[in-house]
Image (cartoon, rainbow, N blue to C red; front, side, top):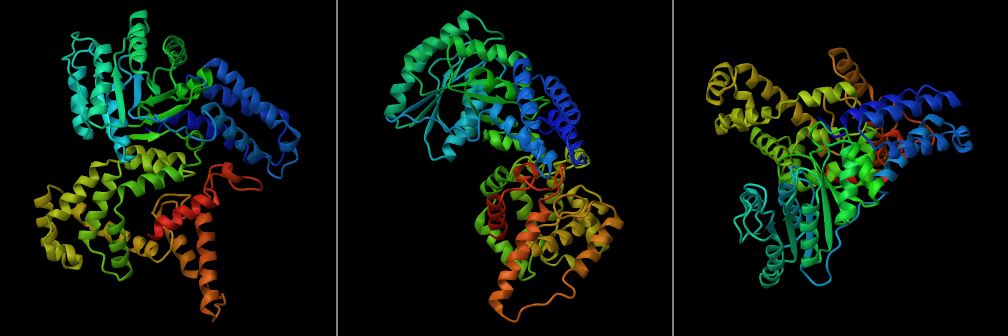
Length: 529
């Protein structure tokens, strides 16, 4: 399920009802505000935050600036987007405060079960990617097997763990935390991440231990780790830790679960401290910097193109991509190359999450994404690896008997082998278009320059493409032809991403679901690599 799924659907539906309104009345605004209030309350957003949010939206939506706008509905969408950004912490993500004299000390606090230990490993792995040399410290000596779990997580992240005590109720966590400072300096670790104990509920013993560790290590950052699914309790817990220990930022965990979003929309506003990171899955790579503006765009189904590009650039090998592009341009793309592309897609992480970052994904498409079985990628690999080198290089030799043999060898059916060959041919055509500077067209995904599904729609789209450009004059000047081609590509990119549920109109800007010119330019550069 996509993060904030229920909240997102409710808000998109409420704002979508304004789309057909040429002029907004006070009754229209009040009706929309009521739906927004109901959606936020159902998402377990704290009542004071809801009251303030809807009051701001209503006041701004009824202003003269909106009433005089050419497209007032778009203006209301933009207002909601800006207010979401505000309560999520502002326009920009806050970076970690690094110590002038290493090591930088990061202390993790929170209730038991919030996911602190796993989060410590994710944060450490992210720090390694940022060219740091972190060390994990096992200062949770209370919870059974907490020390063992941190050692396992540290090993998976490729990061050393300082754990001199066995835990399970044995050892002094304050002494461990203090000793870790000396070890970090001796072994040249520039960041120390301290995993502290939690409790099932807030109590004075928990707070006192956290204060003692804080005083012994003087951390540069104290990150409050909060389970996104605890709902209304998020505010009370956050206030208790803020008053009892103090923290400089929050981290949201379990955003991939049935999270209704209330914690995210309440914590920053009620404590005054920013949300800095988000954990979006069980794998160590399911971790990202929290950008309030991007998160607001995801909630309103406007997509998150920048994060999508960043994740793709991190996962895809540029040299391999360049070689694949050359092969595609020369029509030499084989099933071996297709296999490498599949493996890189798997490396990129959760495919469903990446698709959900596209702008304007309709409700039925979200359902299809949720039903997508990522194990299909494993079956694709098995099928291709069951082929001979000749069959991978020349798929045209795949007759009936060869396909039956491949099906037996890969543990799949002949129909699955046939489907793979068909998809390979379709992907080769699509990627060939991308290699020549075009935009990808994925069948059945509306709003991305793609047919909306069904044979009739596909025939209509094919006819449209066939007739495109008929009767147009082409300049004999090569420089003018190149300039015209660039202009057409830019126009095509804008149209490809213009499928927001809110439509297009004057003054839409970010609220229309269309990426900014900077995002489009970055996306085009990435696709042309």
